[in-house]
Amino acid sequence: MIALASRPTTRNESTAYVFFRVFGARESRKAAARYLRTVMRDFFFLQFSVKFGFKKIPIVSVDHPLDAAVPFTPEKVSVYLDFIAFWIRPIGYIWKRFGRAAGVKYAAEFLGIVDQCYRDAARVYRFRMTTTNRPKYHKGKFLTIHLFDPHYLCVPSLHVIIVTLAYTFYRRAFAELGMGKDEADALNAELHDGAVEITETVLYIKQHSVNCIPAALYAMTNITPKEVNPTVVEEFISCLFKEAPTVEPPSAAKIREYISDIYERLFLEGCHDADWITPIQRLLNAYSLEGFVK
Image 1 (cartoon, rainbow, N blue to C red):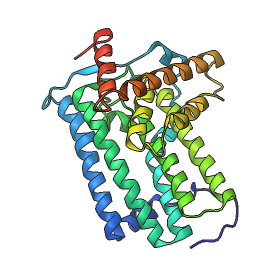
Image 2 (image 1 turned 135 degrees about the vertical axis):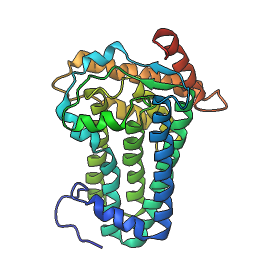
Image 3 (image 1 turned 180 degrees about the vertical axis):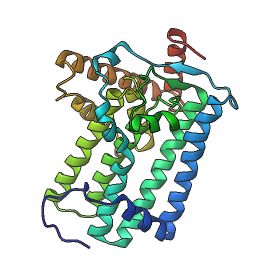
């Protein structure tokens, strides 16, 4: 275990450290292996099987006029690509701070939930794949994005799903571990603000539309309803683009209002459906009429 020497942060944790620790413990290794299989099957193989014509799934455009209010900002790509390290680093912090048993426990639990997130999102993707009009910008890290992401899995946004899971999951974990208030408050604020920032980047680098965000938040109210409820979601939405110098305040307010309205619509409709993905399917059917289907 480690002693606190300065303001607590997860930013200094090594993802390589976590990788070796996770794969060195049987329980977390099994969870990690299941998660990696799911990512390969339900993210990479699923998209590329459609791209190369092995599967036939309609692809729907989900662009929205409000997307234009957020300027393409390629320099934010590093923040966008940090979303995996974002949820890995807190595992390293827990491992060092509370010991191996706690590290294994929360690593295995998180990996189990994130595995479910990918599988549940894939249920939507197998119904309709979704895309947006992203710029033909292939410089630097964008080349990697365009090579490995055919850009067919927009609704719901896995980026938003995962960062929402991360900041709410670790908030619960820190409480269960009996972490002191000052330490927990500092870490929770860091993870919350990081989740907001990464969510904003999906629009800044044009990987998603405003339509992709509420579907992801709605998904999380069904996957982890104890941690993510409408109150938590509305607080999170209220922080989006709150201090964004390149987005005009009236436009930022409209984006927040739109995301909140679509989330509320999905949530209320879902209360009356046997399967929580049904409202998302209806939303995508509406876009297939207004947009285009390949």
